[in-house]
Length: 329
Image 1 (cartoon, rainbow, N blue to C red):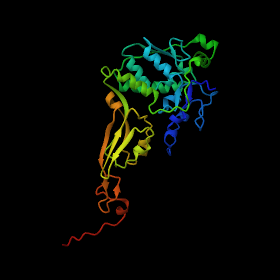
Image 2 (cartoon, one colour; image 1 turned 90 degrees about the vertical axis):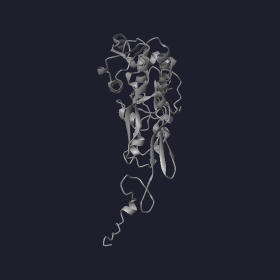
Image 3 (cartoon, rainbow, N blue to C red; image 1 turned 180 degrees about the vertical axis):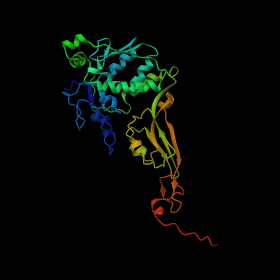
Image 4 (tube, one colour; image 1 turned 45 degrees about the vertical axis):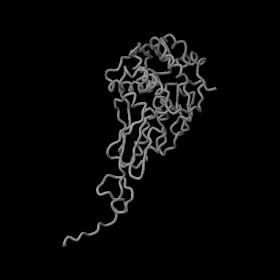
């Protein structure tokens, strides 16, 4: 039986959802303990449950078994107090600050408008999981810069010296939570990551209080050649297209987008980018027309062309010599 608080959801992994030439290795490359194999297997003896694999994974390939319990606590408690296993046991224990990704940070900030949010950590500088904590803190700092008037969170370093002497912090956490772990099925598949879904539910009931949030979204520049390839590589169906022989429209659904940037990588005209913009809940949950273009055809033979050069010429016609023009007449 796998007692780890972090579990690999094979069907949620981007590599399983839709094959790509560039295999996603974010979890493997980010793990400071080399606990994830090339086959995306989690080695329990090496894993410290720091949560960095969850934070960097865009699609819930790795998830925290007790996330539903965490969400229930955040929703229903009069004040939100979170602590890592190395900190004083002041409230609801999480494996590490590293499990808090961008969407969860924003959810906590929204809740901080109506109740106090406190986070206790151990001495992260001395912790073997400081890379995970650092990654989460970097995300928080980016949010802090983008959302300057966000409600304040209370974060304090408060090591638990007593429990650290009696038992290792990892054993303390497992002993305390093993009895209430949710029986998460490792084959479970869902489109929207749990932290995104929680953000959606939290914001939906508070749109009058929180008008807009800084979110990374896809942007299309004028360089778009209307080839229509980007929707075909999207593993989430966040980009779809409507097309006919003359025109192409790109439809974007931000709530489905996990920012894997496959569309950006495949774009030969470098027309796509990911930019942080202030968007409303209506835009987050809706469908956005981000591009509407007219397809171009070779002025000589009528074939499709995928650049913005003038006059429009396909490769074959471009390689042929231009006919001489008689200027004597």
